[in-house]
Length: 258
Image (tube, rainbow, N blue to C red; front, side, top):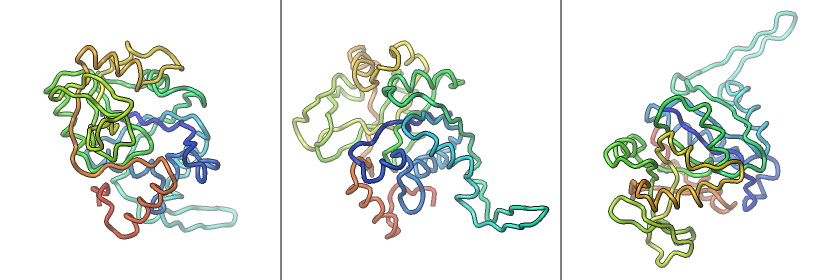
């Protein structure tokens, strides 16, 4: 399945890093956050990516244009017949990557709407460029098929900083901006969507998490795939350092491909 990843936000709460690069390119363990996300999807067999670029999108374009240079040891032969030899190339990164400029100021729903022109099938995967998890991606796909919703999001539990989901079984009925308790489920991203989500998107100013998902919840078409394992977003420098520490200690729960 194709994977749409939002990579265009400003990342203002991580200004220490995002002044120079987009948030998905902030490194964890020497590789961009985006690489970790893509490795997770590839582990489940999903290797065709559509990256929705915006703020400093050229940094992401340059990274993938020089991907082998960034991820392999190299030998250079100089002189009149220069040659580059890449060592230790791996088959597990046989990715197809579409780099799509969706505008610097475009909102999340607008970016998704622009990406739909490149989505080939009726069902696809969708996530943000700033979250890591060990959730079962293919389990979510199976759940989506069984439940028959238009959108299935991975519902996770965290410390109460985010808006909470109101649920009736597996169906999301509403969003609460102010969580009533710290152990409620929130939207962890890592969604499965039907292409008909495009009927709910209204242009570049459309915020996916507002009118479109609220309307889907009202109509009973928004489902929640519960995940009790690891999930962590990277909104702040402190969270980036926490992820870095887990990686350096060899205890990164999201590195399910290793």
